[in-house]
Length: 410
View 1 (cartoon, helix red, strand yellow):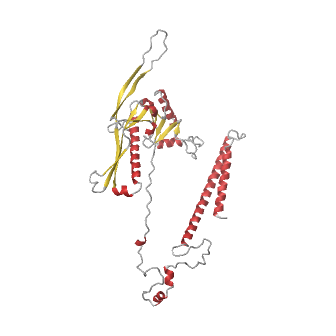
View 2: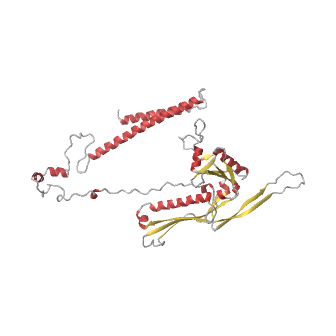
View 3: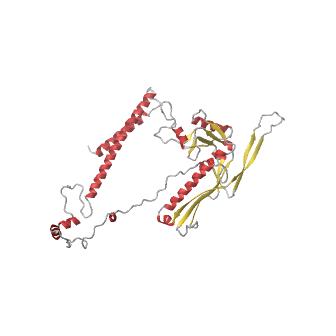
């Protein structure tokens, strides 16, 4: 049996097993009284068989690929430069006469050369119709080194979304942003009789001032690097903007507010706190959501978590080993209790931030991200160097700090 035939059989067996496994899920609400644990055992057994078959198929597929590569290599060797092509079905034991003779063939067929070898003397003859003036000095190993192939520059992986995308977006032309934050709210509404005294409510505000802050980075490059490497300029632009976005997210979440830092949400006065305590992490986050609703009077819209903390949630299992947040075979939604989860290493580990990012927080940008290139730095002009600078100016407004809850100890 050929490897290719074996591979075809493996693929057919896998397809049949997949169909059988799918059949186990048909009519899952009515399985003629079959106990639930029996159904799980059947599904697990089918999955195990499918895994074993897939491994066997992969092994055969790898052997087929190796066989094809070897055949191609043998064919290439049989079609070496200076020799006629040999058909795939030609008997290798009976090679045909080369259409163009190699250097070795010409030397072996030259009588003067053979006489020179027998009499141990130098050969000065001309090799018949050899297409060269004569024999020259053999090339050294260094001369025979192949040329280098340089692949195009690939952009490194980078995130496209940040916590800023969870918020309202705005622009500003000012250097300072001012807005009112409600700091006193007393709801005295009550039922009154006809001509009765109406209760008095109380609201008060504090004027908040936010300075527009700058986040910047630069990198030195040479003129040649920019001019001679295709795609490098766009690569550099993307990486510098990525650096700015990463720092921006860190500032939005945890900036301490001391100039030139932004005051991040976690360090805002008035945000609420929910300790995990003995609760599972999902329970603690739900209690944080309740505080947003009960005290902030608004629906939470998202949760921000560190990757290690989100990992703990995604790997939660029941006592019988079933993953609560979905099967490992599925991608699984980045959601908890219906809220979007922003997973980022810029979030403080062991802490989650639950909040109404829309509409109670807004990021303002002044002019967007700007890129500038100059050779006027230091001695860059005479050394053909360039300074590439990337920067942005932003301000963060948190209209209702009570709409955010810091969940600790997760």
